[in-house]
Length: 142
Image (cartoon, rainbow, N blue to C red; front, side, top):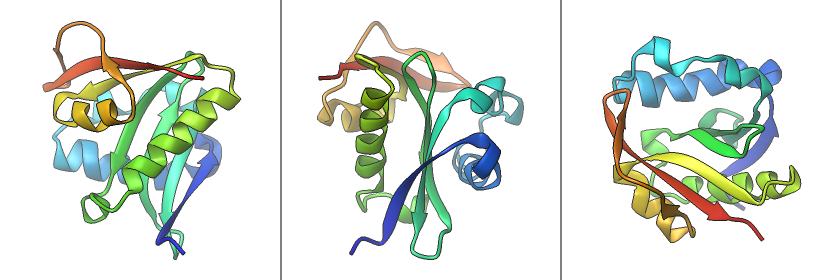
C-alpha cells in the first residue's frame, strides 16, 4: 500500500486543497508573486491532487484544455518519494483520456531532468517566468 493516492478533480470541488499546495510551494517557498499564481485557467482545467492517507493535500498539477500541464507542485516533505512521478503519470493518462496527442509544459529549469526522464524534450531556449528560469518541453503521447 502506498502512502498517497492521486485524484482527478476540479477547482469547484478542491480549490482549498489545491490552493494550499500551490501557495506553500510557489508563493511561500519560491517567491512567486501571488498575483501571478492565480488565474482564470483554474476553473476550466482538470486538476490532479495527491493526498496522503488522511486526505491531506501533498501535491497537485493541472491540465488545461489545450494540452498544457502546469502548476505541478509537491510539498517539500514529500519530495523524493515518488509523488511527482505518480502525479506526472496520472497527468499523462488524463491527457490521453482527453484526446491530447502532445503534452506541453513550462518546466523550471532545475526540474527539466525530471521531465526528460519521463520522455519530455526541450523546445526552444530557456526563458524567465515569475523571476524563475524555465524551458518549454513537450512529449508526444501514444
